[in-house]
Length: 508
Image (cartoon, rainbow, N blue to C red; front, side, top):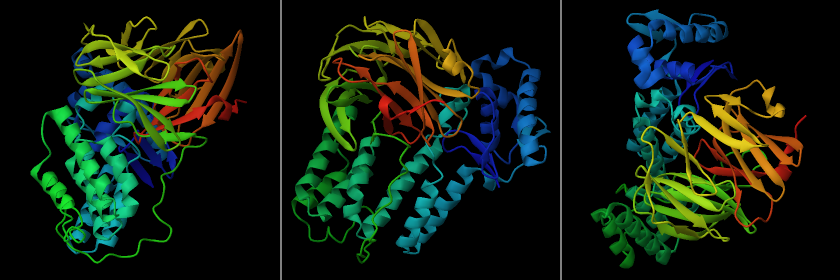
């Protein structure tokens, strides 16, 4: 079986085995060819996907080198020439159905046909099959590569709409009580989508939680006014009035479809939970860019939602808001200093800082400075100075050396990691009362966490085979000097999972 997977980190899988595609430039070529299958993609388009604005400085021979490298990997696995030369460029010799994006769209269309036939239970099953093709963000491992400028982003909206259509089916079948937790997570992930707020309000009201349904409306109204300067839509305002009036028809008008279905008994075994990464201590879904801190009371996540920055204490699945502040602009990136004393943020292209209190409260400085237009904010020093670099680079200090992640290579890394021959995807370092901690992630598919703890001259190496692909990794900064640092990871699904040093296995 042949598969080209775009809905998450790029993967090419043959008979269940993912192939090693090499660095981001070669992966970009595969991504464009698969996304446009069965069309021929011109050499000019592929060169733009690989080099972006620098494509004019390259020649067709440069592109042919990468194509030849890919052929040496793909052709033996597929048993044929996979990337075929065809004027004015190249085309994949593959079935369009082998691309997960096409399969996702086919299942989504079938689910909608079932909805039209009033077969909601069958539609839910097919909707869930379609959702299952998504392993994370579209081309999650190429997010900061030139190829993303050429990628059609419409599948992202299709995914969000499909989830809402599946929830509408579940509401019509009387599964409101089972949906509340998921809907809370959904409005947290995309708080400006009013349909999700209306579905949450209906689910709460039909579960006998009228006050909470009205509170949800208030949260939506406040957020829309803060972020967009707008009031909720007429439909959402009308739903609030119906809940206030305890409209007797609301119990039958199940949300947003206008269709009525007889309630059915919920399944005995309840909803299935998402797969949990191996050894993970807990989960949180942030609303945007995030940084991690560690206090004596547990893990703190600093996250951005538009122009608002929140500090949340998370433990397992419990989340408590510690601090909330408006920054006066849209926050693009949040970073924390190595000692956890300073938070830096990119706000509408300028650099802002906040001092961090021992409980995680932030005190923002009124001083702003412009950031270099071509660089990306990657860190902030304990003195509050920004550290910028190209988007493909990540540099940290560890054991009196500079360690850098450039494309998928580690440069300047300690001996414990230097001998490992695998693509590196994430890097961070921090300090605590125990010493310095460096974490790096490796693997084109499921990620392996490598943790190095330096105390004095001794460096200890531990690892975690997570079972999921991580698109970000961070060492939680100890804001009050108590407790060891935690390793915090953002999965491709957008959720943060975290591991502790003590839970990791000693590397062999």
